[in-house]
Amino acid sequence: MNRLYHVPLSPFCRKVRLVMAEKKIEVELIEERYWEEQPDFLRRNPAGKVPVLKINGLTLSESSAICEYLEETVPDPALMPRDPVTRAEVRRLVMWFDDKFHNEVTSKLLYERVNKKITGQGYPDSTNVKLGAKRIKFHIDYMGWLLDQRRWLAGDHLTLADFAAAAHFSSLDYIRDVDWNRNAQVKDWYAKIKSRPAFRSILADNVPGFPQPRQYSNLDF
Image (cartoon, rainbow, N blue to C red):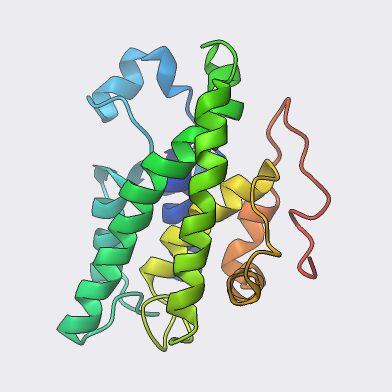
């Protein structure tokens, strides 16, 4: 059995989960308290980070490396286009969300509100929370601009870029930090991707101490 060592609200873990579900790859989810730096886990990934995937006799780490491995070994359905220009755009947007969006928004909202409590690092920094709440507006507006020209974020087809973005937004939606009324196109995009079978596991997540909000699993939000 394939095993994914993960944290439920981690957008990087969620990205891998979405890709595996879309490609219908069965996997056992194992929650990993990576911050405790257990020796067994550090042997799997000396970086001490999740996700870590055990598959086909391999132990893989880093979400981008894992997703590219899955794309190459299970090519159907394709989440990376064949056209090199569009492939470059997909990779650019994946990095946009996993780097820029993560640093400006996810780390300021999710990590402050949830991760600090779970890992025992104290209370949220209100300055960071306010900054994250401000910056997410810019990102939603940018996504709206992209979706005004395209069916999906990178073009006419669903790609890894959409799953990377949805992984971050679903984590933030769990803690009620997304204003879906700010841009109708972004809301429609999320409703479309949220209704895919691959999203069912994500919508079933429940984090102790952080009850799932009513709108989170509602497809008609």
